[in-house]
Image 1 (cartoon, rainbow, N blue to C red):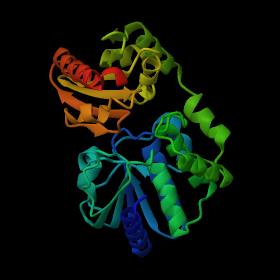
Image 2: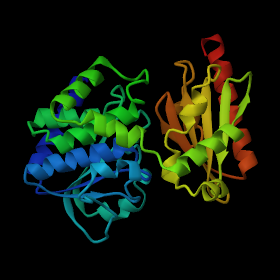
Image 3: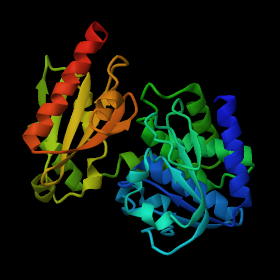
Image 4: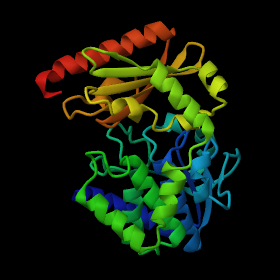
Length: 331
């Protein structure tokens, strides 16, 4: 972390110490890093005597509900006013969805994130792309602020870090990440319970979706690109929710020959969400996603595209082919 980053962190801590009312918000369709970071920060601030509200447009996914037994996460409400709003793990203001118009009555917006594509929309922006999860940044914030890490906070932050590093498998994982995870276990994070809830408690409907993936996934360009579609009818047949798609892409990404994987997810007629994963340092899918006004990380990124399914598929696969060609033998 640079001296500039540390200066910004100091300002964030000073603002949180001075604030009496804080709202912690996250992106639409929250994942483990988003929710774990939100709840970890909110619980720590509440323990320090702050009035804290936690808002998300979408509800807590079932597999992460164990992090929020008290239903702290709520849908946004218009007309509220806060001294400080903290956005965690959200790369752009638009990604806050329905939360954004409900947080305009505020003194300060703090943006805490690790996405290189972050648009720096806050009044204070603490963005550290070299750290693989926002949960690791929140732990650093609590350490520097000398706020106690309760067991519930440790569970939240360990979940945040574990899920955004692929359970510490992604190359973005650093020695510092592993040290932070060890410290969280020392602070009470229940490793066995977290892994059981997050990785080993999938509903039967997810199995049906996974069966669809193995039946419908396609390989192209010398088996270096893998992709599949998830349409509304597929969810209906599987009796599944959208939240159950988390991690499905890893099943095709894991194929030995595959360099980059893509999921095309139908959101509405004429609107598709893409998720991209790369196994090669030479293929930066964040740059690919940015071609479609999306973003993320070099190894994991996404975007939303308007157009017919066939047109979207052609555009995205063409961009992936260009990225593979540019990477050449390095991919």
